[in-house]
Length: 77
Picture 1 (cartoon, rainbow, N blue to C red):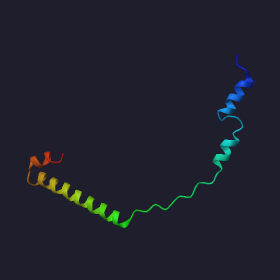
Picture 2 (tube, rainbow, N blue to C red):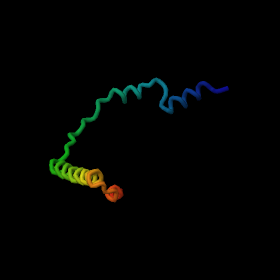
Picture 3 (cartoon, rainbow, N blue to C red):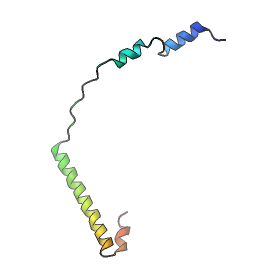
Picture 4 (cartoon, rainbow, N blue to C red):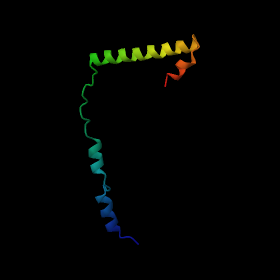
């Protein structure tokens, strides 16, 4: 059926074989990971934007529940 020699050479050319190449890739040390930091100004601005959004949502929720204003419910979208 199939030629064993040609099958073996195809297998090795596709990365098969002894696996020495795979082992050497797995044994490499990991590259150093850089420090990832968020600038303080960005964190403060983002927190302020989220606070404004939450206050807006709470205001709408208050209008819907206390004032029973269904029109505000439609303004959410």
